Length: 277
Image (cartoon, rainbow, N blue to C red):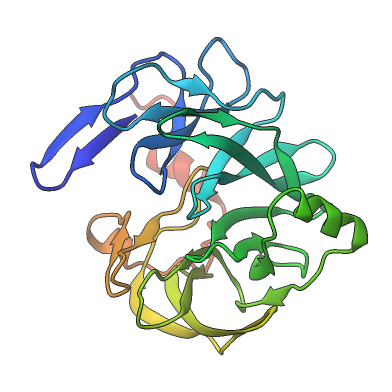
């Protein structure tokens, strides 16, 4: 796992373990990076974190037989939302709480379930004020972005016993929600089917969340969504995005159709008949 320093145009590696490190996620204070790793001869990736300046060793945060990937830090730095693959409930969203501080030392707690229905739930993202958690789910039959209030453990556990609480659908075909951190407006971005970035303005009235009709934010296409991390991220000013983009025409090619090739082996035999070297 490496860090690219924009000002110096340099790439510095932070981890050198032979395990596979994926899904790096900066802590809100910029002191640490959480990530998923198979180090220590693990067959399944769990959560770790490492100081961003490279000092000290990576610390293991969770121990589970299920594969885990960090998704989003609560702005207060004391909750980490992550996704987990469960054989019974597919993709789930869990919350890892922390106690302590930078001076006295941080201590990870016991993960609690935020969502673990029979449907896919992943791509969790905390709002800038920490009151809401956006995520993607296929409960409607296709992947959509939803928003739920975040109360934090143990209140989250008490709410789970009483019922799921409020839930609001934001998208019409899309995933990878990303909240704008701009002070001038409230907006929630997501990656729509086909690769375009969409944005929906929202308002909050008490405990109710209301999203307006989404609109296309940029006509440019972004590569598809992946399990280990998003392919785009929003600048704090809300005006620019960093995009993992393919080069040349591949980046702009539409990915909304399938090409069917018939009689492939007949054509192959014509081009390279038996006996030709």
